[in-house]
Image 1 (cartoon, rainbow, N blue to C red):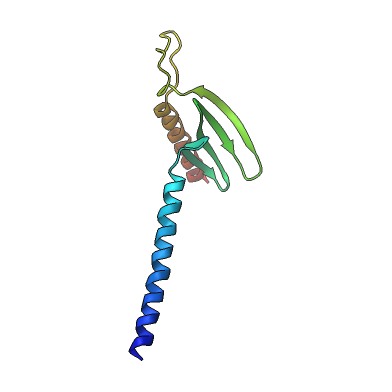
Image 2 (tube, rainbow, N blue to C red):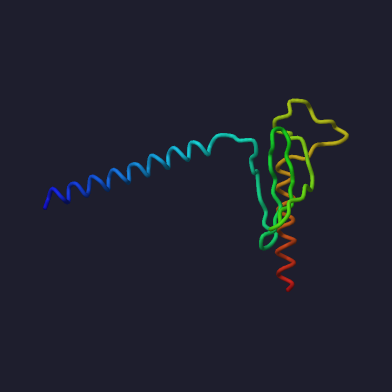
Length: 115
């Protein structure tokens, strides 16, 4: 009877170990930089929002709904651009995008508070 419990325990340990190894493998695989990276997302309601997406050297501000994607604005990524920005026309930064997303969220919250 003890041998049966020992075999069952070893089989369970083997299955749990295999699941843990698979999890480590998949996590390492997901950490690789792909073509596209989501920098931020701000929900504006059910199935609606705005996302900042980095593709290569470009940052895209995209409006997202359940059935559609719309490009709102496109910028060059100032963090990886070695050329200095022109003084007459400063580039928008990722922090500026995050600030604007925060303002949009505050506007949404104020809109829902009125109802």
